[in-house]
Amino acid sequence: MSVNPMAGIQIGNQRAQQAMTNMQMQKGIYDMSAEQQKVFADLLAGRGKLLAPYKIWIHSPKLAAALETIGTFLNKKGSLCEREVELIICIIANHWKSEYVWAAHVNICLKLGYAQSVFADMRAGKTPAFDNERERTIFDLAAIAMAPGAGPDEVFDRAERALGRNGIAEVLGLLGYYSSVAMGMKLHRVPVPGKA
Image (cartoon, rainbow, N blue to C red; front, side, top):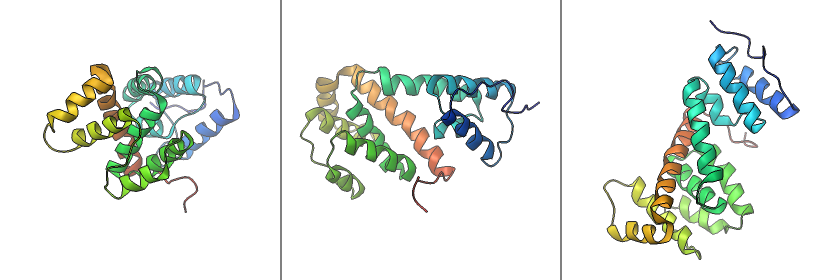
């Protein structure tokens, strides 16, 4: 049985209201089950808005709730700094050619001080020049993780020295989590804001 998505959900601000409206307007989502409604309300309570991937994942409410836990940890509570997290997101968005994710996170990276050339090189299939050894290591680790086979021991050993096993696990977790984000946004043809 489905219910009206507005029933029982307290919306605390205008952005949250807009998220609900956008959710309702999305093709195929005019009402939600009670379980979806609860997860939706929890997401709004935690973030104040519904991020675009959750509009896709809400179709599987248990998945949406689990991915929120993973995403929050990887983005806010892990050992990697914001610059490193955003770099990883751009690497995987480029890999999947997910334009929405790419555009949003390249913009964040530029604000965090990355040079535009880093992203031009990525798009051209080149290895960018990094001044920061951790960032270079993250790029190289991600490259071997996305390629067939186990990759060179040298890259893994360098990653272990620079990031530790904890950091390696988080890089791989981010690649997996944002693969799901990138594929979902791409397959659902979510438009890049500001592009016609």
